[in-house]
Length: 409
Ligand code: AMP
Ligand code: MG
Image (cartoon, rainbow, N blue to C red; front, side, top):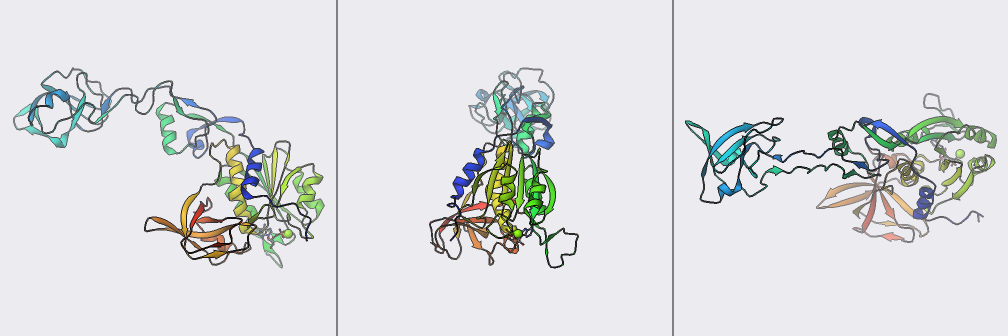
């Protein structure tokens, strides 16, 4: 029997971690560098866009009232209006203007008929036959459809995707306020580890540092590799003492109950206050979380798959909170289980699955190997299937919750 504290449910562990994180100070960056980040403040529209009613089609700007009788209706064409030019004449009854997509609607006109619904008349260049009626607003893009000056264009916490950045650029806004990127230190621990460019001898290559660093970068953080600390209290402590100025420190391995598991002791010796240790989850049970000043310490388990799964479920949400995202929880989608699963109650399992769309549903097939030591089991996974803590069996076709993985290519 161990004297370890009770295991925290996954949701509570995540809530406690998020409670330790607040968005980092704001920096103004060019839009390119803001992609995928979240706004640090509400952005108001400086411009009304489009600035005028304009045509959604190449065609003819008309008065809808001219087209209420029998069709076709013959109208006199007053002028041609191009995008980027201003109309010069009013469209009076019995007339229209040729108009191109994006050109401002001339005064008097209230609708557009697309060119395909008209017929030009041989020998009568200034006339057109309209074949179809057009109610007010037909194919007109109204002024202010994209933005109205002074209105909130995008709210704080909104992630900046490509169209969001387009909206800001349309406003003439080239730089964007976002929380600065978290600085994340990554430390591997273990006597058996060597760098990828070293011969492993009796040991193994340190996979966690480079994979976690990539995961950090993909989540929007800036990773710094601190190298490998050997399995002594002093070595781990010395490495962790070099973490001043980091927002988050990730360690891997050495957090379990093995004879050489010194991460918890080293954190304590450095004055890091432990917030919790161990979560009711598989893989990833030995996760330890602590805090010193503004630095969050997260001791991830050593098995490469466990460290990636805990990254996904606990570290990534923390980084997203630091990056100011309104929505920080791991994403979830509904799916069906292909096959069946069973386990003892007590731990929530996050089963690596390959999910494919079939007959209108997402079907999740558990990968053959689920041991956390085998990285192969993470390699083909597209989602994690949440097998709840107190459930012991899931039958074929069960409705399940799937977490899309951020680590897929
Ligand atoms: P530990 O928590 O130290 O007992 O480590 C658990 C397992 O993860 C052991 O099999 C370790 O060899 C393995 N492991 C620990 N760190 C790494 C790493 N950085 N890269 C690959 N495997 C690791
Ligand atoms: Mg170890």
